[in-house]
Length: 327
Image (cartoon, rainbow, N blue to C red):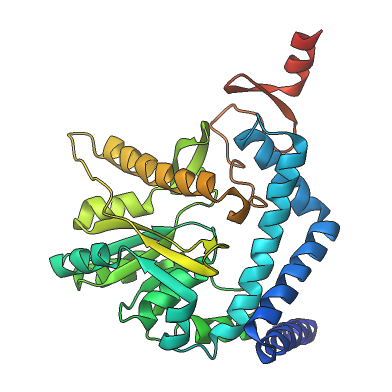
């Protein structure tokens, strides 16, 4: 790392450490309010992210008004700010304080899966407080080995890693994850994976997400079919009425096998993605709309973000064709 790289790394770390420390010194409610305020600022000045979110919402909810889609997008930024505020207090959280913050539903499904002894895969998406899914479970006595992309800044990575693993969790670098994941499952452990991001064609399969083919990681399905591990959904959305996060753990997803392993992987990936969509529809203002979920396209399809398209019925039509049809 050169001199400029070291300086930049140090400055980025100092900014992150100062922000998190400042928020952590405030009462939790104040930290969350401040985080949501930062989310509103990010919405105002994050033009590129705002454009991506607007496009995603147009594709996912073509029947909503522009005003309603804007409300959901503002909620997305506010939710990210809330997560920042909450994360700042995770470093000093205790199992008791997390139990007051999180209401767990369906823990019996995880306990039954763990009792099988064949390994458990928990999957979630970037919805609500996804950082809480593994942290709270470990605080409640259920250790999770979770996949994570290492942060480019090693000092910030160390800071975040220390918080994520303080109750015994372990992170697995997703760039070299195959063997560690197999070891976790073969020992009867629990693995956590986020499965709602766009993937490159060689890393996934296309399955429908809001009726539009989305390149989705196939690693979870491949791993489950190979190991016979149970696959359970887990989500942690914020519930305004209860003033708590609801940690939902659902029963295992059905896994079927046929004479076509590739189709088995695609079918299981599709079922997992349907669960993700169900939660996004239930809590639309809490999902990560600013990520280009449909960026990778099947061969021959146009870029849905570079060339604007118009929603026509249940399909997507290139903008130039839609304009011709409107004449």
